[in-house]
Length: 123
Image 1 (tube, helix red, strand yellow):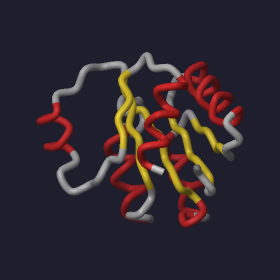
Image 2 (cartoon, one colour):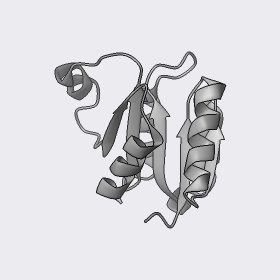
Image 3 (cartoon, helix red, strand yellow):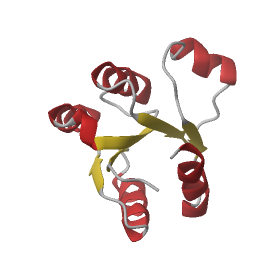
């Protein structure tokens, strides 16, 4: 399904750990960060190695929208899944990221089965 690395970013360490463990149980290689700036730094070291980025939208230092914009500047072909615990209107979402393609969206709370379904769809 996924051959490359996965990058997961969420400022909530508990959620981040659950996602990382769940993805690793699927046999995937995962790098996880609570700080989007550090995740961006890591991504920029080897952008072509990453096949998928999963990011929370609302984070204190850099929000997920800005993070994804920076990621897509470095590697426009990387797949991206955004997640949030807040309801987001489709119009709001597309007005903030009009030129950036998002491959999947997860509404928290979600199950690993739901994440797996999205992975199957986009990979």
